[in-house]
Length: 401
Image (tube, rainbow, N blue to C red; front, side):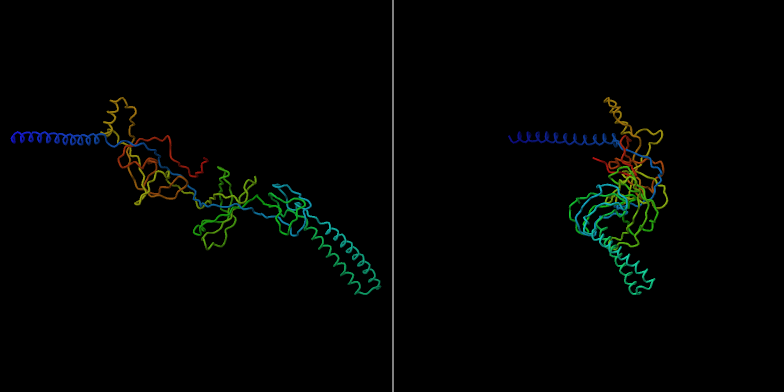
């Protein structure tokens, strides 16, 4: 019995060893053949967009955000108190300097003015009579001088009262556009109460600040361009008219004032705009879309398209893939690589909108990958598809949703 048990156990052990060995051998062969198959297939091609780097002329500019301000702008008000008798303007109207805007009740002041004018006329008649009598030596010089002083005093009183009456009439101090008013006839106004805003809109100022290190690049008369989101695609031209001689000690910025023409009165005080000031001469740069760059701690890189060598056959992996696709009837669906990726270090310069200047590392006409670089490495086959290109606008604008 013991001998039969030993034989059975030996047979079972042998069977287990054979089965385990077969499984291990199968897995080993599977791994070997899988590696060979992957090696034969090669690196799959990646679809990218490309652009040929070329020279462009750039106008160096300083950019800032400014606020529009009227050349003249006031809250028109009266010096004295009183009741409004008549409002003689329409809100939003254009007025000229001296136009009457509002009148207040001044009946008592006008009546007093008439009384003073009558007194002045009497004083003038007395003075003429005194002059004639003095010539005839009928009165003394002292009496003549007193009559002359009375005349001057009466005239001064008339002028003073006339000034008080004129203060009851509000006039436009300069040409401009009126705003909205809430004043109505019969309303009582205190001294200094605002009646309406008056703004002179053409020309119009825009105030902005620049860092003190850029002051040397500015100058009175330099052209500026202003863009406002309320008028997309429209540029307003102007010139720098004043540079503040004092630098703000808190921000180390200097305030700059530019004047813009505003013939249509479409620009109004309080709006903000993006200001560009042209500085220096135009410069030529090799430019690329910023999406072409890969920013790394060790420097900026781009992938260039290295064309296949003339007469050189396609890589074996690609040939095998194309052969397999042809057998499956899908040869037309397998794109043919148009080159390989090669990573190159570059030195970048200034940026302008979606563009960046390349000052070192590339030559004019080099084909560079502009999107899809994140999935590339050296030697990756490339398929170029430029149907949808990345943004490459030197002056991008916000898109309306």
